[in-house]
Length: 98
Image (tube, rainbow, N blue to C red; front, side, top):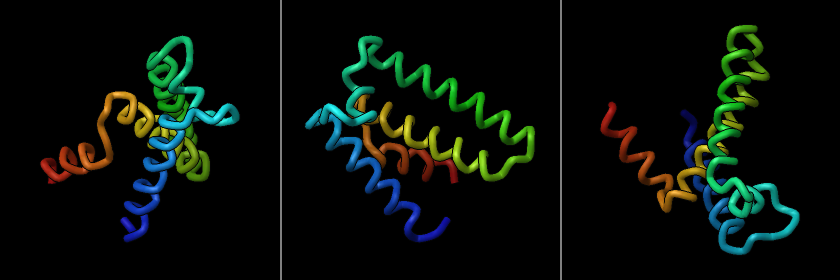
């Protein structure tokens, strides 16, 4: 893992938190927080992206695998924010698994 990977994730999470707080009308992220399905919208996206990730891996499509992995991380961060969690909660859990 490169040194700036954590920075990118922290920056992305900060943007997600900002979209959650300010709910700009033209923001996909904000729309996830205000969706009529509630958190189910994010859960459905995680399921969809997981399927796409599996298919990319099966097809040995590394470019698509990277793309779908990023989609999963993004939607996971949105879900953590919805649950009033943050990236440190994820780091703590991952550290326990070393």
